[in-house]
Length: 297
Image (tube, rainbow, N blue to C red):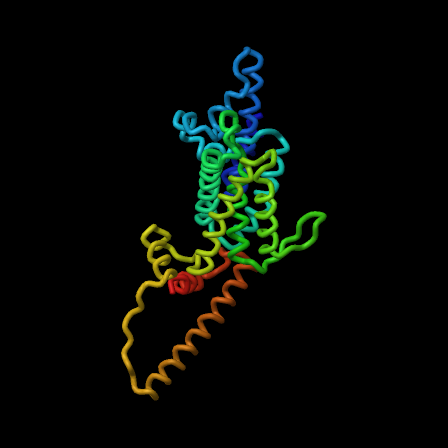
């Protein structure tokens, strides 16, 4: 038995963030099931875990357990719910890490899950259709966070293809469109709360994917100050003043600038091809520094 637990701990420590999250979700589900069994045996409330860790639509109940805006991402309703979410996480989580670092994974996963929870709360408390469901509605599952990863990847690499079992090959951009359309059409279905959260997670992933595509993800500084400066450039800060040069001199300078930009672009493409083939860790220190500088431009 000791060897079994030692093996589990070793695999957890050595695994990527994807494997760690799968282990955590499975452990929470097993704990949830065990608590449910014990509660039924002793005549207590069997859904105590759900009440404590799933996200309630009722804002008065949310005030009593505000941590559920985060914890709901690690609780699942049943075994099939857990299985399909973890299968989706395993596939798209590893696919995400082919292009992004773990830091971006944390940001997109947690951010998408939280925005998904907020969309669920807003929808149930602002839209008349959900008024009669507020008192008994609870949100659980990692799907909003996983969908955030999927959409971020789809908008960062829209032409990348994935092979889905029994469905064939799809470009990520079309897969993203299909997933959003399905959730929009399901807003009045049995899993309306889940669909609302999916849309929130998808929007966070979309914004993250567009941001990383525009400004790059190789920056060592992803602070709020850096993000604010990048967004300021994206929405049109005033350009620095330029001064007139004699026509011939300006032409020479422009041509040299274009040549340098072309050389830099070709080198970035070559390095990214190397990342795609062998992973980010295969880059030399000089290549990583070059990508870092290119991402800041």
